Amino acid sequence: MASKPPVTPPVKPIRLPVTDDGGSVVLERRTQKVKPPQMYEVVMLNDDYTPMEFVVGVIQEFFGKDLEAATRIMLMIHMDGKGVCGVYSKDVAATKVDQVLDAAAKAGHPLQCVSQPLD
Ligand code: TYC
Image (cartoon, rainbow, N blue to C red):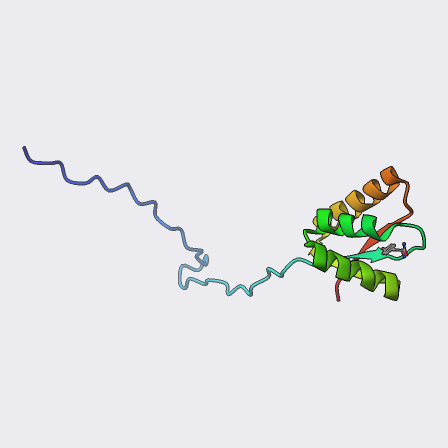
């Protein structure tokens, strides 16, 4: 038995912008307007009371660092007064700050953390 020919879907005609003088068709040239999103760094601040082990644990848990990287970041903060734990879009950075402050408050530590735009 012969098979049916493939059915092609109807093609919708494309409407081009036309000028009302009936002559030429003008397509506007558009420049690319999409920019990469503003990024934010999450900066942790040193204090004299939060235990080093707690800071290392927080950096591992919320910033996805392994023990070695988290320890390095913690020591940098301890020595320099502050340090970057990660760089994120605005909302994600704000969530990280909330998570750190929440964990610190629940544990009774004064650990502070802020997010700030890069550049
Ligand atoms: N300075 C703290 C101490 O000696 C440790 C510490 C490191 C605290 C980093 C906060 O963001 C911090 N126990």
